[in-house]
Length: 151
Image (cartoon, rainbow, N blue to C red):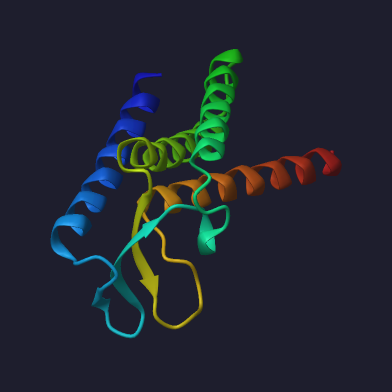
């Protein structure tokens, strides 16, 4: 469990560090090229989820995040898990807590990564963690199901 919680802490430090750097370096609602024509860094304050969905629903996000984190802590400690399940857990937990810290501290989430070649929401390190964690969980569940059916 030490490795799991150490990994979560490192991801939180990365997330909060990038957000702090963005807030101190890039003026609000402006951006700068990072990888020209691919990815820019754009300082945005987001009071909702992707595409601003559920904007200004801080209490909703507090409740959902607390429930998700409490459920994940119970899930992780309930029984021995496979390593891939712990990877998903670490990513999802770190992502949820990273954005939760912003909402508690600031009342909004700092987003900064913007794809230049597609209409996609601006996102942050915590969002990347959440997306990767859910993807790992879904792929693992599908592979496990297919393996069980093949027996």
